[in-house]
Image (cartoon, rainbow, N blue to C red; front, side, top):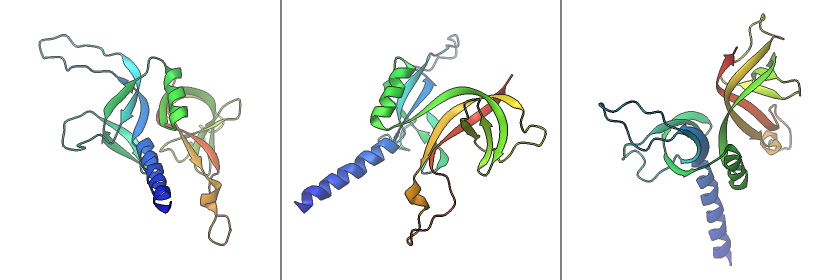
Length: 186
């Protein structure tokens, strides 16, 4: 019986690792590289399920993409595991399989500074943290900006803020919206 539970535990760890190996992102679909004498082709962009832990990692020439890997940005080889026809289909699949999805979004809001960095606060009160921006300049605070970037969501568990004695340390709890590779839009 103990062996059975050990196998279930291993299977759970395997599934958790498998989920970390997949991300959904909108990318150009490239079926072949154009030859020098051929006209440049434009490739359609589609939401795709990307395997960033493919077999023979580092041994085969593949496209690469920048993803968050073990808490930091890293360039990873990838293979397209699945193409989605619509954004809604991709979002539904991501929610069902608990896979990260990178959506390009455009938000409009007021520039504010928070403890964890610069944010855009929308009229509905949603705060979008801007990756790699510690704070707004004084002249920018309370100004309205339109920002476009890749939306990433982090979930911070309250349990991680407790020490062995049950005391809380400082940190965020709940969902945090982060815009990566962002830029201002006029």
